[in-house]
Image 1 (tube, one colour):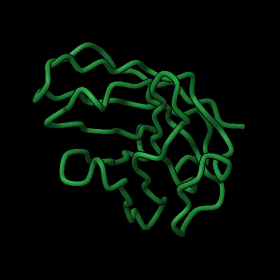
Image 2 (cartoon, helix red, strand yellow):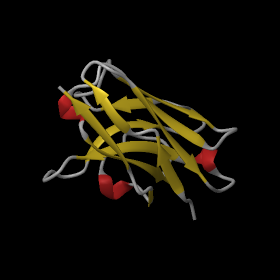
Image 3 (tube, rainbow, N blue to C red):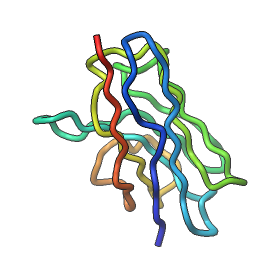
Image 4 (tube, one colour):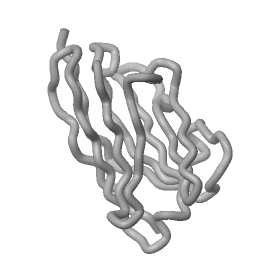
Length: 125
């Protein structure tokens, strides 16, 4: 069982930056792939970024490439999402998720096994 707790959300002006953190419980954090998803009001939850474990290959949604960066610190059981040049359309509830099937390009909501409660990001224009 893995428990995930997100933090770092808030209100920021367009063009600003935020760094989200996701702290995970459990001894096997390094073996999980970790992902960030987001859900805006009235919309489906969508993939944002993924980082595999042990061999930390990263994947990004086209809408955030070049602006967001996912990273992980296995010693701290934490995954991060650095968000730069934020836009109003980035406004959403951001979720951290863990995928036991490490490796591969797994970008769908249903492919992740554990989820956090989410942290709100609001970008004003």
